[in-house]
Amino acid sequence: MTGAEGAFLPVADQMARLCRGVVDLTSADELAQKLTRSWAKGQPLTVKVGFDPTAPDIHLGHTVLMRKMRDFQDLGHRLVYVIGDFTASIGDPSGRSKTRPPLSREQILANAETYTRQAFLILDAERTTTRFNSEWLGALGADGLIRLAAQYTVARMLERRDFRERLDSGAPISIHELLYPLAQAYDSVALSADVELGGTDQLFNLNVGREIMPVTGSSPRSS
Image (tube, rainbow, N blue to C red; front, side):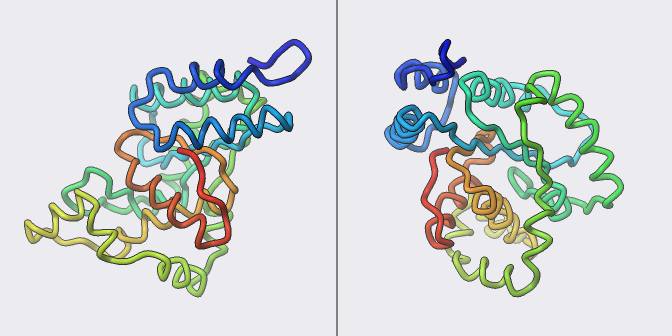
């Protein structure tokens, strides 16, 4: 939590709490630098976390991530809880050996309602900014999506293990699945995220965001 006068805790104390239990930290030095600037200016970091409502209930893995989200909240930082209603309509290919079946808009919104209700059993609802990524991804349009896709290569995308395994085995990969990491990356651009959190299965997607941010005029961010 923040100090008695509203100032942030010393950076070393924040780092100790935020790094506890973390499996992958892209750059501890970069996170420390951002926390130092935040502490010096008295301005919170913007922390972005996204969940695709592809099922009606959150699972145990989500709660582990949400507790880390709560750590950032308790330290005084700004948490943006992104409901991936747009990306859920694509279907996250992470860990998948075949294309996900599409969900209807009605299914996505119903799942989002229960997801959010359950998430706020852990998160502080009053200190959480909730956004739907259809706000900015829906507004991109065909022209914006093409320009976004031009910032990444097929070869780089196929470094992703699940894509590579499917390609090697002859399993189909739909074009829209290749767009998923870019769509998730654009969430970070739209929100000017300082920090991104996600499960270990999301590491590739999060790193795409870090690579896309500089070429779209944003600074690379800590994740």
